[in-house]
Length: 187
Image (tube, rainbow, N blue to C red; front, side, top):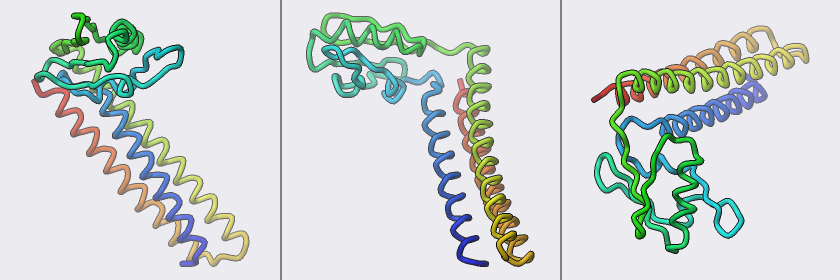
């Protein structure tokens, strides 16, 4: 194949890898009933007037499988941290004991587990849409090269290669979703 086709394939692979990475990050945010400090990665707090990531104003740790503790570097931040966790819409109820903020992770009901699985599958579908968009871009580029003189055989081979890449990344997405579903449904 020509160098232009190879470049288009590499660009498509790069974009699809980013879609997989984004999916992995999004799936990590979907909690499976186990305490994990990364659950609070999206939380921001008001630190002297500017929104700041929670991890930059406190230590976030797990005490056990159901408890997260947030130890602020400044005691004056306790109320702001609790407010930030509540405002993050994670469904968590922080408790301030004057020293640390303690978050008990509730046990998931069967209905909640099914909702989380639906959410995970929706994230997987978003990633697949992104991959299909990359396929369309790559195929459009190959067609434009064909219009500029690329032989029919090279164009067909390029499109076949794009489809193989799409199939590979779609399988990776399915595997990630299956793993997350197992994680969520395990009691």
